[in-house]
Image 1 (cartoon, rainbow, N blue to C red):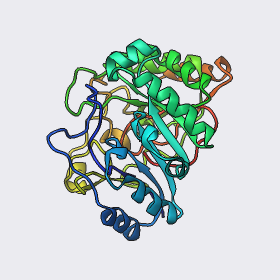
Image 2 (cartoon, one colour; image 1 turned 90 degrees about the horizontal axis):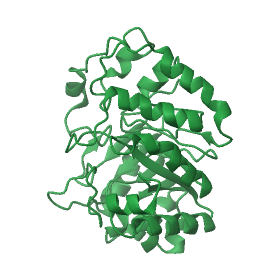
Image 3 (cartoon, helix red, strand yellow; image 1 turned 30 degrees about the vertical axis):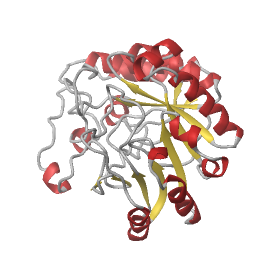
Image 4 (cartoon, rainbow, N blue to C red; image 1 turned 90 degrees about the vertical axis):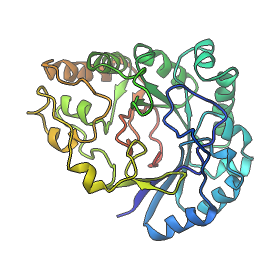
Amino acid sequence: MEFNIGIGLTNACDLACPHCYRDTDRIDQLSLEQVTSACECLPVRSVNLGTGENGLHPDYAEIVRALAARGVKLSLTSNGYTIDRSSDETLSAFREVEVSIDFPTEAEQDAFRGHGNWKRVMAAIERAQRLGVTVTVLTVMMKTNFRRLPEIAKVAFAAGANYRVNVYQPVKTDAFTLTYEEFWDGFRRLLAAARLVSTTEPILNAMLGAPFKNGSGCGRQTVRITPKGDIVPCVYWNPRPICASRTCPRKVPTACSPLPSSRASAWCRRSAGAAHSSRPATAVARAGASSPAASSSPIRTVRSCEARRSISSGLPPPNASS
């Protein structure tokens, strides 16, 4: 079996987004030797460069060339900075790039991420597409934007991009954590506006009757290599033995206990926090079932390699890990 590997070349970033999980106590970075060694030790299907802004790594371009020479599928997650700083040759080595948009207007995006970020992201989308690179817009669904997902999806579709959603994970602060009701409200709104074609979000999949069989790839099909050199099943997992973490599974919400795969996926559900509601499982299933006719732009989930909840849309992107 081949793995999808997420690699954080560095945790350095030009922005200081308040919801970010990256370690800001110090700057760490992987060497070219560490990256190539990982590819030699594991059967690699694809590599995603994420975590910080990879373009801030002094050997970024060299590492991209080395990975491309191995023939692995490459993808990049960026706030726009790395795409802006990449040469055409370097950017063309990626099969897919993801850019972060968390609000549907320039004023809101810049207020949250930094002045000028909206224009930088839009320029990055246009440039990547001009070079033939698939683009996905990535949104972190959180307390401050869960009602705005349909609007952000429209921005993505209008730009010719796919769309994917990750649910906020409380690593450093609970300020953006969704309540159980907000979690479902956000998905209901999104699925009423665009068609879901795949998801690896375990709770959503269970509520829909488990139509998608792949499940989360965390630790099974995907691994992460952090800028410190730790190998973990997901970026939200502290570097410790996996078996030790699995001995303390999270409690399965009462409403989910009779659903398929509820026990298997309960240990990796982080953002459903207060999911101990008796809300009928059919409520979301109906919302999801009605969504295919709501939009001509299909939604497609790419992957959720870190126990993150994912939705994406548009043309089928390549199989990549991020």
